[in-house]
Image (tube, rainbow, N blue to C red):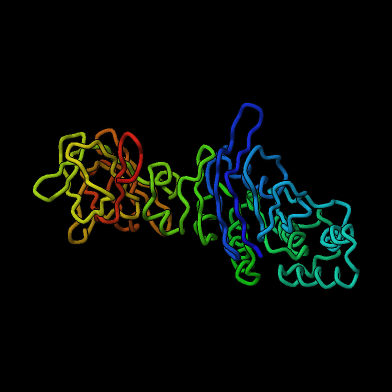
Length: 362
């Protein structure tokens, strides 16, 4: 019974309204990631689900039970925080078992749950150590284990990997994915790291200013962002944006750029009627650009190379088209010289178009 339903949620602090009328349905066994910049409301939403914040309107249902006004301990959830929040004077075993002892769980059941969590997280050799004797990754495993021993259907993660270095984050990201596959539990995970979101989630909810901008599978978020904010926030380096006006005539659609040149948009799937003369923004991801051997049907943007950044496995090439800066991800042996004029080829069907005024996908 791990389904989570948030209905018309209102959360505010004094005169500041953080969430207004927010709705969210999380399916049983789903790994949902709340993604967005600092201050977008993602942690507020998670804390409201956990019962750590008072809400001013709406309802929260967990497993078919209305928990809107229930205490956190009665919501049948396990929560893992950004700070490990371990008891420093207790051993790993003590940290794992303390909550169960306070809940008057029988000793045999405590041993069973603690052993199972330690086996799952591979922390058996650490059971007698104290937190000060553990690495950051080991401490976070213990924090996750403390949530696991509660034997609940819903787990909430509030940026649990933020305090770790890059290597450990990658390792624990893989472990969390494996953990979800083994448990099959519902998991709601807050992060501002798009890599974590895209690699972990079954679905991603991209938030901005307290509003869920898009809720979809990672590939759909990446390939078909619903607005310019989502397009610019997801992807590294960020999506390139070029302004212009649509030119529709004789059944063909193109885009006139600010320098007066026109490129073809043949193959692009418009959501509605393009509209001749409509101000628009073309979005193309760095890895969707080819500068050496273009595919059939590709359109081209004229650029002048300004910076070349070797990244090892690939190279980032930065160029300018008028006042617009664009980045391209190319093979190391394809990097052009700085100052060289090049053509940035892209397939229109892979690109994105947004209305200049509203930012909504066209």
